[in-house]
Length: 71
Image 1 (cartoon, one colour):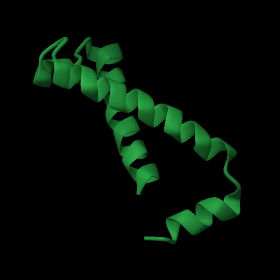
Image 2 (cartoon, one colour):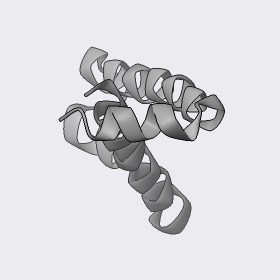
Image 3 (cartoon, helix red, strand yellow):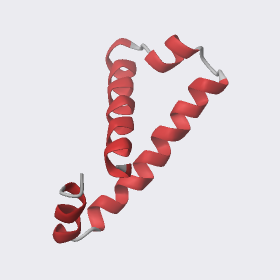
Image 4 (cartoon, one colour):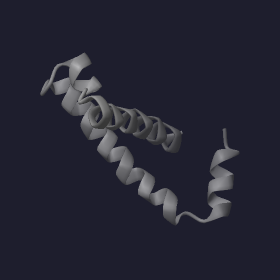
């Protein structure tokens, strides 16, 4: 469950960074207000998700297979 949540947040963050790079549009700041507590919370959650997903690089394949079949 945590792995999927972290990946979803990373996808949101990646799309947001893509929009910033291509169109200079920060969608999170636009929706929730630049510098607002909610926007900052989303940025922090995306950063925590990125740190969490680092562990995916170091997990053994059998651990990943067990976690994905544990739905």
